[in-house]
Length: 182
Image (tube, rainbow, N blue to C red; front, side, top):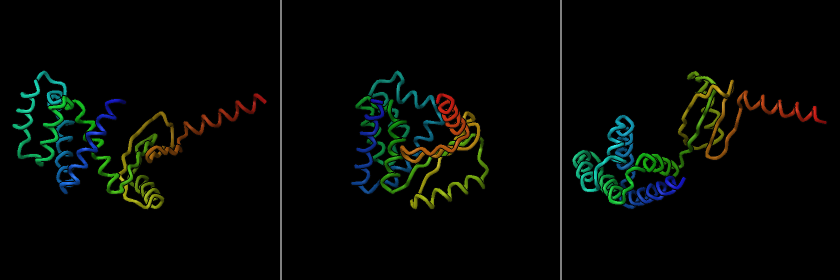
């Protein structure tokens, strides 16, 4: 929890700097590629974040690997994180930066969790209904959770709408137990 609060501060600071320099789009694109690289190479993520290198050695490696490949602001930001010994938070910072960029653009993030994999038609229908309701651009993430038994859940920010069979059965059970106690 504390690390997320710290990471959010760094993500906000980066967004503020990128906005001031009118470089949000290129910085965002470069950081997306960096995040994909870190996810594809856990060894690199470990080396940057928690590896045995000291600050100067890590800065040298960051420069050698990423100089000329990242927007200068993004590279300076990584070197700043290294100086502050915060590269271990990089993955979280990059995720939060992406979320803050979406918020700034008015994009709504929607998490759909279904009991079974949705067909393209089912997903398209659900996204269409959500788009009509939200009337804003949205990014949809889809997950599968067999514990739902059937149906799905939709999370938009902190609001969760649960249309799962597991929840309906739990509600039915509560009603049944309540009726038997009277």
